[in-house]
Length: 241
Image 1 (cartoon, rainbow, N blue to C red):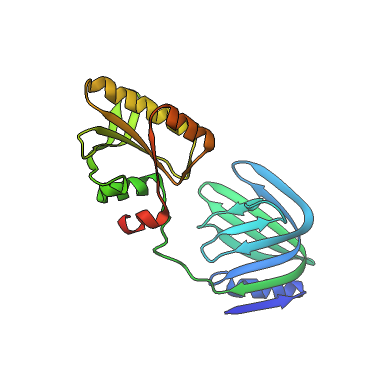
Image 2 (image 1 turned 120 degrees about the vertical axis):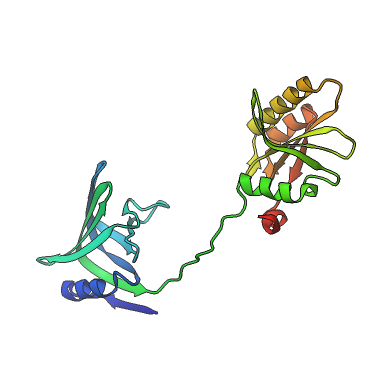
């Protein structure tokens, strides 16, 4: 459901926002100035901006660039709508901690209200924990015959994501990284492997870095140190998280 007004009067825009602010997402485009006060302070001079309000109390002021809003208040804030002469005033109050956003709209070019759904079971797949969980559930994601011995194995040089054993009885240190592995990830794995070798003299120890990719410089270090790389995709792990 979508309703909108083009170039509304201040009175019409005020009534429109008041009618829908508790039940719909509202988008306003106009000549906007704004102030924020609370844990800090900020002021925006008059210029065209986009304002978004949501039924949960979210308020955002966007400009033509940048990913994030320049001023905002989070869920749980309360929105008040009023008129000051020919100016539409939005005041958002967050009560804990106290934060105030005051928006003065000198000209409303467009105001829209829309019903937008909510994905209640939304889940981000691909964190390091997700990958480790997937390997714990299906160790063959590392390689056939791989067996997990310990998760988050604590050492003097840090916590190893997974310590396991291959089908030949070698110990295997598995370090998981989200996204592309960097040289630092390789150096970290090398430290873990050296530590495990020192604690297990005479036993073979391998190191495997698991990530979605690896940089060229990191791959050079990996080969120089005699370590290995396994690439994962979100499709590999989605059935195990």
